Length: 404
Image (cartoon, rainbow, N blue to C red; front, side):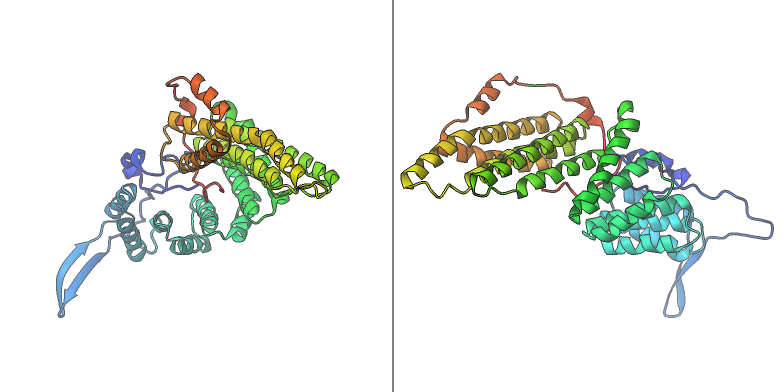
């Protein structure tokens, strides 16, 4: 959720800008073409460089040229150059209408450099100015909230998103605000309050955007964190004695596992590549976590040593299927990453690491995994790349990567 503002004369460069995958509904700032009244003459400032009391150099500034050069530097990810040029506009044209777009773009450059305190200061400065154009102020609020999220300042981030939700937003902006407000509440561990916001973000997307074939980053993120809530409930429940308690714990863990799994599958159906890989990875993790929980469950104290050994051996035989499922899930995620061209993605690397570690443990403990062997034998040598996952881009940038 951000927009880079440039002169209409610089539209030529826009197709190659790094933010081209952001919402198209954000208009670019256009120059003020209103003719000045009679007897008013606007002249660009001149820079006089002096040394030893003598003028050594005179430079005539050109606002249009400064802006175009700054925009091009930004598009080439030369953020230091862009920052200097935007700062020059702010310094030498303090009353010009382009001041607001230049300030916003400079903040974006700081944000892309991970200089978040500088970005936050500029966004706050924009929001203090009553003359800031409404569209720039709206974008600044979103980016300020996102910057707070990047610094893990989840409370002020949530407060900004919550305030935005009280305003008249477009459908896409409302989805973003709901999703990122829910994300902030998730990390504030206010899961009950986060859940309705995440659900509403997904519902709005499914009602308005999904029928048109749109893929929305924020909606997929919402579905993922909605699943994570039930995943955490599943993970936090431990097995306890006596057996009546243990049965209650097993029922509760199974319910939350199945609910989280269904929600992760729904995240995959939203067809955003990054969140799909994250969701499949988490499904595999749940199978591993269920195995670990059952393996660590307390053994009935009335059993003697011989009975305890038999109990443990039988338990391992029965729960081994959970590791089979985890291996197959990780294997499929690796295949998915390869098919959609995300071999260098973080979630692909994490999946590969877990797959290799678990496979080594399984082979040492149980031999070759039959389900994995069966899947590998049935798998065709190559499969077509799903175009929706490969080509569609997120509607806005995340405030943080998916939780691990």
